[in-house]
Length: 523
Image (tube, rainbow, N blue to C red; front, side, top):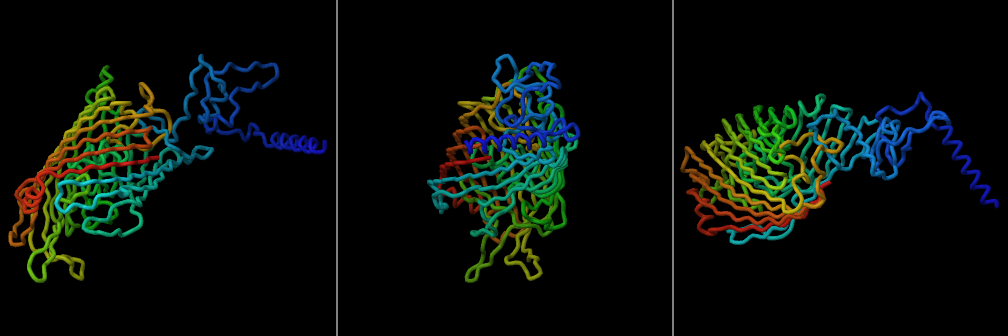
């Protein structure tokens, strides 16, 4: 009996405290403040005992975020076949038909002023080489291991901060320089939704469609040679960019000023590069929904280097290096030389993407690049400058064609390619929800040709003359939601050309095979 009285007293005390803390009309929550459906009353209370409650207007889903106005309008927690699902709470950013939406995990303050998207990316690869001349070791390694945080401050300021623990060492180095390198690190101002966004920081350069697809969502384990080797070998750049969409994604534009030296570097030469991309959907307004996503576009890159950084090395999907900017000459005590960026650089690209009924797809891109270089002696002088022994010019072109077939599921499991708009809450407008499972078969053919001319043939640069690479890839990827992925990627490479490197590779391995297995988790 004593225990019963104690429990009764505690219960009465909790009820009294709850009544004392009940909100009054002066401290009632904001009309749109988010309330978890599991914690909120879902029926409209009567103001008097004689007033009759309004009939419920919608059904609350477990864990769904609602606004107070939904509760005032009446909502039912019980399953009702005759009622629709309650609409989701609007995104923190301005509501926009073109807004990228997401069901990612998030944290949000009660007043909605701060919204955070914690994220992580883990990609574990296993690579097996066959027929390669002096190949890397077979085995497994961590390709990417990122921790990221994105979010909104108010309705107009978006940010993203990420670091990669699994980033490979810099080109020409066998050791890591830091425990973690920055990936996407930027701020974005979006007071007009996704129509006009000012983005500053480090992010994927707006050159080629392929380079503006996240590492999470590539059809293959790596980007095509067109973007990865020739177009944007650094992938990310530091600078400022204006980008956005017009209409129902009928047009996407991006243009910006960048350092041009890649990620993790301050401006190396006080020069600025201009980079931009434009993509239009010519069938976006047609009644044929199956082809509304067809896009055609182009990109440009223009800049100048003054005692710039080394020209990046180039490698296959599996990491086999076929273009090395360093070489040695002389006997006895050899001299180490290097190709460095010096002078004019300009490049342009064309793109075509044809998704059909969210099940099939055809994609093609072409890139041409002209770049002036210098041939210097290493190491650098005590002043940091290099002794220039010769000058060179690189003219390159690359292209790829890609076919995709969703054997199971469809491409709604992934975001629209090439946009990388700020993440928002809400349910994306679609004819049907994204599938839970997806099985994608992708086939890609690639071609790369580079002509390097030097004004000092005695320097014996093994990259001078013409180098060629033809590559074919087949990839099968299984997706569970958009967070777990297993990809088996087969690659066959054929080297050719008249450079000394190309002759050695063509003679010692007519065909170079790579088999890549990737397990990936993305939050």
